[in-house]
Image (cartoon, rainbow, N blue to C red; front, side, top):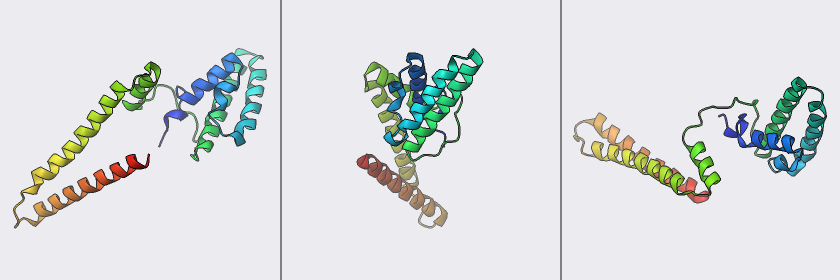
Length: 167
């Protein structure tokens, strides 16, 4: 599964761009583990040196630094790295709404969206169970359909609860 942090407009690359623009490694350093900080610092210094050669060299060096930062970030999270993804990918509604909440320091709109989504999803699953509940006892296929729908609903809500409960 592709992650938002692997994209050219994700938070890791944005932080790396800022670090290069400000010539301050601290803008990106917190995205990698302490055991990988040395590798990132080395890449940062090399990138700054190469950037001075030409615009083309700077572009190539920057991209290499972005890849290094994202790769080290993914290692820190025990995730594989499969290269940078282009900017502008559709991450669905969650990422933009969450970014806006963080930017505005207001979670209300995001919570309303997320809670409505959860409410509608669970309600739809529940209504499917209720619709299938009054099956004809002599129709084994309808009975199985109800049982499957009911058990999937119970399993889904239990997993959802446990996931949220565990954090």
